[in-house]
Structures are given as C-alpha cells and as structure tokens.
Image (cartoon, rainbow, N blue to C red; front, side, top):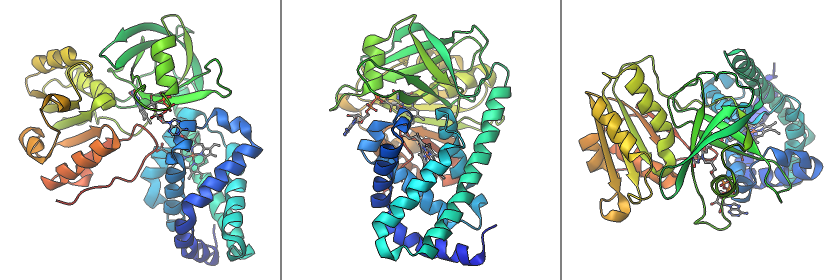
Length: 395
Ligand SMILES: Cc1cc2nc3c(=O)[nH]c(=O)nc-3n(C[C@H](O)[C@H](O)[C@H](O)COP(=O)(O)OP(=O)(O)OC[C@H]3O[C@@H](n4cnc5c(N)ncnc54)[C@H](O)[C@@H]3O)c2cc1C
Ligand code: HEM
C-alpha cells in the first residue's frame, strides 16, 4: 500500500514528467540498452528509431501515475499492453531493469528538481505499477499454456504454404513443428513471430494478425512487403524475399484484446485500410462459419485493385451470407476515401464497429464515425504498431 504522501507526490509530479516525458524515456532507453544490450533481442528497433515506443511508454507511465491510487481505472490499457508483453515473452525479472533505468533517467533529466523524496515516491509507485503488470501477465501466460494445444512463450513453426494475395501482400501458413493441434483464438488476435536474419546482430520480433478463422491445423498471417520506404522493412521484406515453404520461425501463442465478440449476434461493421484487413478477414470468416445470419458490413479501402488482397474470397463470403454487404474503394482509381458520406450509407446503424489501418486512415474513419453519431463504446480499433493517440478531427 502506498502512503497518501507518496500518492500526492507522484500525482503532483505527473505534469513535470509529462513535460519531460519523451526526453526521460529517450535517456532511459539509451541507458538501459547500454547496460543490457540483450534486451535489443526483444525491442523493435524501428519503433525505437521512430520514437513510437518512447511515446507509448511515456503515455502509459503518465496514465498509471495519474491513477496510482486506482489502477483499476486503467485496467483496459494495462491488459492491452500486457497482451503485447506476453506475446513478446516479457518476464517478471525484466521489470526491475526497466524500473532502475527509468528512475535513473528521471534523475538525470530533472537534475536537482528530482529530490530524494520524489525519487523514493516514484520508486514505490513503479513497484506497484510493475506488480500490476506482472500479475496480469502471469495470468495470461498460465492461460495460454493451459489451453488445449497451448504453450507459454515461443514455439517452432514451419512455413507450410506461401501464397501471393496481391502485388504487395503475401500469406504464410504456419504449422507447429511438434505436429500438435493449435489452440483456438479470438478472431482479430495476433501472434508475435521471432526470427534471426543473416547479418542482423539481434533477434527480430514482429506482430501479425491471424488472417483467417481459427482452425486446429495452421495459423495464417498475411504480410505487406514494406519496400516503398527507406530503410526497407526488415522482417516483411525478408519474409517475402527469403523465406519459403519448409523454413522455420518461432511463434507466440495468439494475443490481443482487439477481437470480435463471438457471443453476440449484434450487427457488426468491419472497416479496414490496406493490410489492416487481416484481422477483419478472421472476423468475417468466423461470422460466416458460426453466425451466418448475423448482419455484417465489410468496408475496405485499398490503393488499387492490384494492391488489394482477398477480393475474391470476400466476394464469395459476402454472397454466401444473407445479411452481408461488401464495399471496397480504390483510392488511386478515383473512388475517393472512406468518409462520413460513405459510412452513413454503408456502416450499419447502431452496430459494433471494428477499424484497422494506417494511423491517418484510423483518424479519418473514427472522426467520420463520430460525425455520423457512433459513440466510442461502439468503436474498437487496432494499431499495427505501438498504440498511439488518435488525432481526431471535430466535425
Ligand atoms: C497488433 C499488430 C498486428 C499487425 N498485423 C499485421 C498484419 O497482419 N500484416 C502486416 O503486414 N503487418 C502487420 N503488423 C505490422 C508488422 O508488425 C510490422 O510492423 C510490419 O510488417 C513492418 O515490419 P518490418 O520489419 O518489415 O519493418 P521495420 O524494419 O520494422 O520498419 C518499419 C518502418 O520503420 C521505418 N524505419 C526503420 N528503421 C528506421 C530508422 N532507423 N529511422 C526511420 N525509420 C525507420 C521503415 O522505413 C519502415 O517504414 C501488425 C502490427 C501489430 C502491432
Ligand atoms: C510498468 C512498466 C511498463 C510499462 C508501463 C510498459 C508500457 C508499454 C507500452 C505502452 C507499450 C506499447 C504497447 C503497444 O504496442 O501498444 C509497451 C510495449 C513493449 N514493452 Fe513495455 N512496459 C513496461 C515494462 C516493460 C518491460 C519490463 C519490458 C522488458 C524489458 C518491456 C518491453 C516491451 C516491449 C519489447 C514492447 C514492444 C515494443 C515495440 O514493439 O517496439 N516493457 N510497453
């Protein structure tokens, strides 16, 4: 239990940390990786370079500190982060390393302003926050390990099939090397894949949504080749160019809190941009298999026909369902973007909405959903990177 004094100190220093938040976490990562280079086998270097992870961690620490006497209020955020941690194999023994380096960075950046009293209060608060994460993560590890066909951290899989789905997206069907059947998962969840690439010093980890309804045989991921950027995407390009049927990678058990509520039969609208359609594929297929009467709209935006994956599959599913619509816009072929006008026509009124795509796409779509009357409790979304703050446009 934290004393009232500690709580007061922590809460009153949140604005100071917010002001220096990014500097503190940048110093923190630099110091931590110098002292513990082995952690570079876990962290995503591209996210580090682009400052995305720094922002995500800073936001999480402020949110936790501001709610330090009532962490239950941020439980959904803790659960979302814990899913990511669990999929990456983060362990309790990692927490003191983060704590020590975070406090060190606070001291270094704030200088004399970080009195021993403030540092002690933050050390105590960090302990409470870390325990909350460790507790939630332990439950998650236990649960995935105990599941039928489950495992705790990573397990070896073979690429069983490699299928080109569009000019930029290729699917990989993954089978466990031990031949056991796979655990079920919730449509919308992702796995972390872990691999070594020749010439790379550290192991690389990336998340990929499972792009089909659960089955006992194989996982399927569908990966966009990130080669229109500098530097080129390391893992996606390696998967596309160098990995083939028979090659092995390590895979975590499915994770994530962005998934279709399969207990419900309420109407659903699935909205995706580009490769953001992967979790929606799993959701749409699951509806087709389990609740074909359910009212569903699959709304998608792709750059061109050649960029789009799964068009024929989507048409087939749509035709097989009595209460489904499938609409796609090709932005570079003159169809425009998904906006309020389009959504007021095709999004099902009062439905649960799932959104996934690039960050600017999500900002635009969620702003448009608000404009036409959808409330936040109906809108679920997933970032294909560390969670960011949405920058919504007011109507
Ligand atoms: C929950 C979740 C689900 C996902 N599902 C999918 C999915 O189904 N399909 C899919 O294709 N992707 C998915 N992703 C994204 C995926 O995890 C990878 O981020 C993506 O494949 C890119 O990885 P990469 O290794 O190819 O690129 P990276 O090497 O990680 O590079 C990513 C970007 O960072 C830039 N970058 C790298 N280094 C630097 C630097 N030093 N300075 C500046 N910029 C830099 C690159 O130019 C590139 O634009 C998902 C992500 C999450 C979090
Ligand atoms: C209380 C302490 C911690 C907090 C508040 C925290 C917060 C976060 C947040 C907000 C994210 C981004 C989640 C997302 O993808 O949306 C994240 C991801 C991550 N965290 Fe933590 N974390 C903590 C402890 C740790 C520890 C101890 C480790 C291991 C050393 C760790 C390793 C990671 C990694 C590897 C990622 C993914 C990074 C990436 O993809 O770039 N975290 N964490």
